[in-house]
Length: 452
Image (cartoon, rainbow, N blue to C red; front, side, top):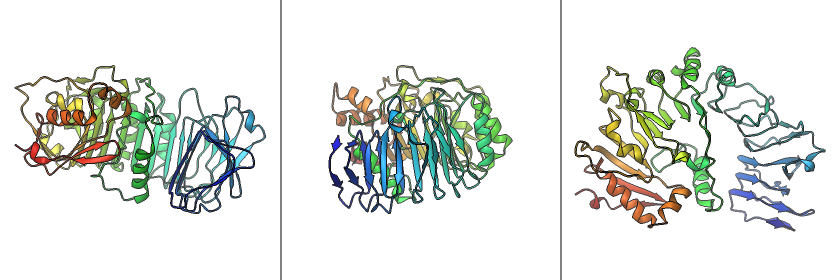
């Protein structure tokens, strides 16, 4: 899309996303006063932000921005970077609190100098130099890299960091350094894969209390605004055999198992030794695990104070068969005590269908959230124990699954089929709500249809 004039935006808009935009010379887009979230994806041209005093988050994807007072000149990064040969350093304005860089690949030594007031920073698949040394109170840091794209980074004081998110490598060198310096971090997220299409670990549902109204509104806006053509594509990631035990060893060596309250692990192999480590995270409230092979005794290894558990296979590799591997370790604790505090379970539909292999499975749960799938199942007369549930949520399907479903039926028929299938595994006698997240809305299901 091209712009040839000074384009003013409606003043009430809070969230703005510009993708594949080219603003011609002598033209500009004037960002409105109410804007809080601005995403510039593969853009070229000038943005006037003089009125945008309330910006809370800015995302740069495949483009860099030169700041000249209230004018932001966005430069698209072509394959040779000919369009930025005069640029040496970029210093960010003081008012930016949260900044995200994605796919910023430069062939010259360009230094991004981040402003002192920045509180959240994310650097995802970039090849650039970042200077964060001016930051006074950093609260969240995310560092995702690939082997072919490495960045250099000067870190600030990390003692205020509460959330540490990073990709994994086989040496764990960066991880130990960051974990040591982020002494007050309570939230740890480890990636060995990254696929935005199949990320079922961060979806906000109506049952999760969100303290930050801006974050909740932004999540809703993003899910409502992305069209089918703009939806993230599955990147079929390669799964590396990185041993989770090495990371757990570092965590326990630094005594961080006593302070972490949120732990998310994606695409790292988990063995019996890893289960023993998980059991000892005494302060853990939320655990999210994304694996291709799942141990059958995973539920008995949950920390005693856990309140929310998310477990799903690597959905972007649906051509691979989900494997539930028999666990060898037997814990002496009463299985019911392991799940005493658990309130929310988000689980892949294929795991619910095969719950007889997950021993011991839950007897009851307050909120059950189902990650949709297409599964084949035959009734098993020996597997007739149902889980008592008070709230049931069927999460939104991704665009790939939606395409498969609509080849033979409608989405409404698919969701009805999922509920009929769940009737074999879920006890609806005490249920108070059944919600289906379909497209951009939530549909409440008539309880009387499933309580007979």
